[in-house]
Image (cartoon, rainbow, N blue to C red; front, side, top):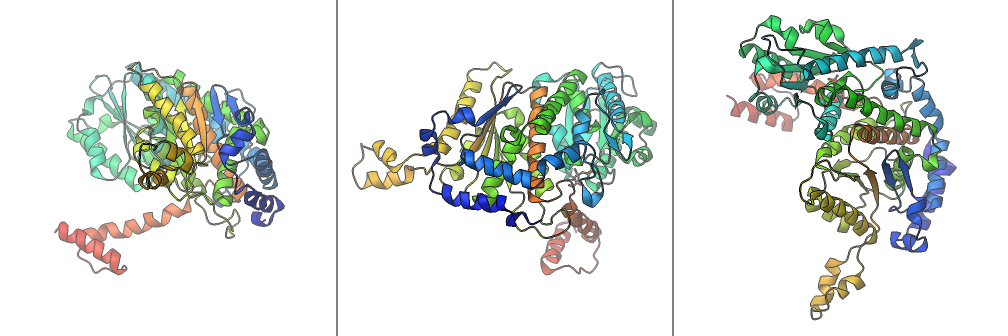
Length: 543
Ligand code: F6P
């Protein structure tokens, strides 16, 4: 089905033309209670979507679009283990990872996966606790003080986000991340550490990702250089992979290898054993709360009508801007230093999932799919890219994520930061008219006054969503991440694409394999002249 030919799509196009001259200021003036009908709350999370260029009719039309594309049926198929990842013939069951142990069976190829999930979860949590409480010591009997997680993409970004976000809940083992193949990354992490008190965790679903294996071998060499024996690897290395055999072949004993499942994509895997660094950082009780928060969002997503369904609304409003209003991207702005990794995490989750140009069955899509996601922590970004959001020529909707409480009690930093977040959403929505700008400049003579007022005028009508968390704790973090997962799923269903494969990243990997030996050898080059020139310059710099 070509969705752009559907009545639902075309009704939205016509409605977009009708809405073109409407300013959000007018929408708020016409309905002073607009917030009441355009916000949702769930377990200490508030989602305010009233500062958008939408009316009740827009929302109804968007919900119709979602129904036309079969969103409710697709969500059910995902939940029950349907193989909705068609190109890889796989089920998509990250939601099963956060189901309680006594949940109804979820079957893949006839096998109930719930007992397997909980067996691996319990093993990983027990390992994490043994590091935290000092029962698992290093080979020389010393307590483990540092845990180095080596992985990339989905095997890195989720755990890194969660470990940083939950800093106030940290226990006594320091957790570090190595992802980049650039040697500066691993060199800087290892410099202050000691082999006797360090545990490495090699995280790779495939156990074949070259960056991760390169760093794994560097870690192993560093470990031996630190005076420990090859046999000591058993106490100092763990692995998380669905390729358990390859992890064993690396020399990691079965007890330290935690399984991943092929029905969970890398970027959706923080809820699995890939969350081991989070478990080590915050302990089992908090990790289980993180899972419960995600499960609470799943329950909401699977059982709430679309008009009040938080992830679905977030998705549909995004579709409104990108497919009908010509938006150029999506800003993600967490007003929390501890959530500074959220934009990077969402870049992978969103762009790797929905950066697709083919429909589920291989046809060419007739509309835009995933947009450009970017962001930075507030308030820093106010002093960076916010100028463009306020006065640029492009439409860039923004999500503001703000925690209402802080565990830190330093000055009035937190209240100041929250005030800035709220003020930005107000300024983006209201703008400043020429008349208001002129009124601020009464002290200036003409024509200087009018000229400066033109620069100080803000168009406003710039959309934002506010996602407020009572507090940034494991439960709310779980809800927040699951909310974005379901947003991305919803958009993928409406666009008719497969959000769960990633063929686009494979090609560059294959070419890199050819180029690496060419950097070292003086053999003739057969690339385009640009690539040849780059290789030649490298050779000149490394004779
Ligand atoms: O970037 C491509 C990718 O395949 C991601 O989807 C994945 O999260 C990452 O590489 C790492 O893969 P692995 O966990 O198999 O090392």
